[in-house]
Image (tube, rainbow, N blue to C red; front, side):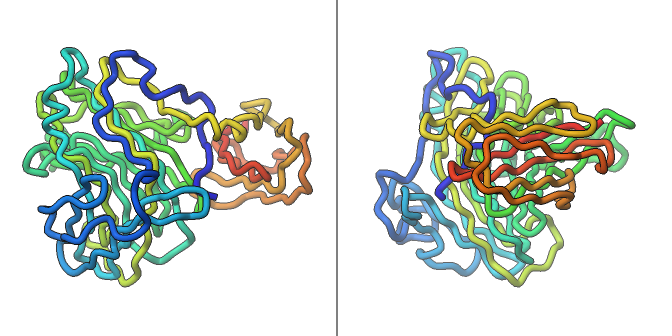
Length: 353
């Protein structure tokens, strides 16, 4: 399956009529095969994308792949600890000529979380400034740990030992019993739609995912007044500085969109993906039992995991419509429910009292 809808409350991209699309790429107009034939980032390839490798690499590391129901972009990571492969576009012209007031840069994309792996590759989508020293906004997914993080240039000098620089941000926040930020761990072998926005005027950066997986608050980055210049899709050799790595991973991307808007908006959703949203989970919060309903009577498996990615329950079904799951044995806290059906997969979040 090419992708899975994970948005419950997502509305259409371009909700605000004055939004200007700067980059959109779903690979449908690209030809299966290499994106380009130049790894120096100087000569554009298909779709005017530029490709670049820090160290060793080949043109086949940047591919358009047909997965059977549409094309996607595939970037092959390195099996070393010191290499980055990225494809990018210069967006300075379109951003510079945006309409007055459209000062919110909004980026969203689909990515595949991949299988369980020992690879320390990470996939990233980043909006950079002119000299690539400042991340105006971005998202990073570590293939080995399955942790999704936000990225931004940030002033951390108020903290002991803190410096001004590019930081990663944990995306899971719980207020009780004590306020805690933690890693957001995603399911393997699943398509996710995520995004971020950068407010040129205020520096605010918002990290987005349509089902409420991201519970951390927006941050005020240190890039207010800095123009967006380069949009990147990347696979880096490591997910955090200092890690070792001997295994490569595939970064699979689809439906990349970058637009300039007057105000921040929600993620978009395609009409053909709405079926997965018909699954209902209630009550939420729940104490002893939680109900799952699918009017298409097609549920085949439900997996419950905690926020650390540990599976706490997994039950198989034979295309049923109504399910009641006993959760009285679970500890209080937040859980993720992965619902597999003949229509695809969806992920719901619920609170156990």
